[in-house]
Image (cartoon, rainbow, N blue to C red; front, side, top):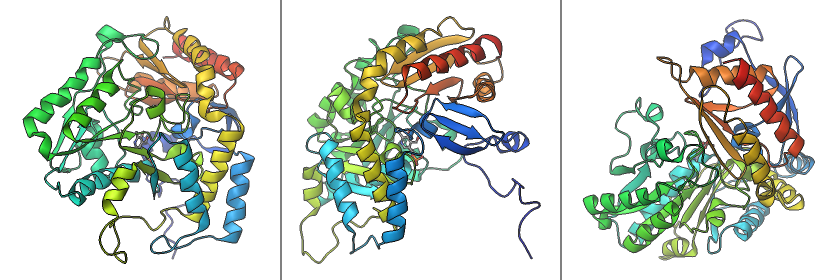
Length: 441
Ligand SMILES: Cc1ncc(COP(=O)(O)O)c(C=O)c1O
């Protein structure tokens, strides 16, 4: 007998992620097609993609090089075991990735998502110290409001309360730095805020409390995305780097959002000119098309594991799908597309036009802050009394009706369009959003 609940269109079986399931299933919003800057909805409308899907479709939708690479690979080599065996494209891809990474990030471990990249990075950090005979360094330091995916490592170092509070004790030995959001001083700043760089010295306080000899790594998003776009104050990341170096602590940049051109350089590490020891990525690596992540590490970290008898596995970690052939092909097609169209630096060309358009919404009702960097923007709305998140969610629904995809978190609207966006799309996006903010919420 079938296990299906009801009709073929019954929506109950799929428990949707990070979704108001009951609201959605009453008024479904389905995408059935996509091309370049637009989605097509099940009711036949075009929706301008203001969020690159979920911060991942950096080259726009259904790009031919990527689609073709997947098609070809699926017919040639569908799967190769990832442990003790390999296939050429995984190696080719790692070389291509290292070529665009910050200098010295010479090795890549593959994962299948941002969450897995984060947990991989945390494990590399712990194991690195131990491999060097420094196993007392077991602590991991994250930051309030940080988002590092949803696995246990990521939510432990993460700082978003609703993602943590339901899940017990999490990892032990974790501490958090304060977030850097100072709206009373920095509201409506264009680019990096002036105030708050000194908050990095809170890391010194944490080091003093626990002693450096117990701390393995600090993890931060260079630009915090999912919490609602918090841009690092001037000097903040540099100071974190100094403190980590001084105390022998590894610095991990979680670049799942900022990686692959979002700020106008391949990685935020290059944009801010601050070199971490480990970089986590996913999303834009395959243009969001196939699940894949990559963790970049320095030679110093990699080489610390390369000792002992050669027949022994050096690092007991990996996934069935690490470097999967079809994912590798998709990533190679993506890198080709980025290169041919100059997309890894395109955000730099458009950033000031984007910034002007975004800040033109300053006078709309209920707008209490606007923030931007590269091709990222955020509009913070004042919450409806007693009903937090409702105003922004209602803006999301209204924008969708008007043919615009935005993302909301709390009462913040976050924008991160595909990097192929043209100026006329930017105009259209902000016109539509102005209509939503002015009249409908
Ligand atoms: C900074 C950061 N890290 C990790 C993740 C988790 O990625 P995934 O959803 O692919 O697991 C995200 C997702 O938005 C992210 O923004």
